[in-house]
Length: 115
Image (tube, rainbow, N blue to C red; front, side, top):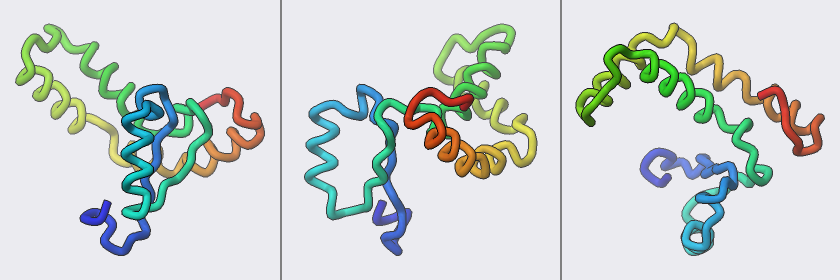
């Protein structure tokens, strides 16, 4: 965080999924809490994380490949090809959807949303 956000304005965020809420993770976050700001997400709310959508898009693109990747190098090539084939603005659209995601979560009082 100190390298990417030397202005100390960056925030660390995670969705409290089980691996992110493990004792080891929580201990590390507590030990390093003075190194960065920590944005607290609602428990187990992956619909708030745009990375879930991006990962799913990559997964879908790789699953469509014929033949499927069989080696780590094949997988890397498939991911790179998929990245180049994303429509212009795909990532920006995902980022810009964040306020709507938050509003949906608030309306649902932390429950499931259409995201």
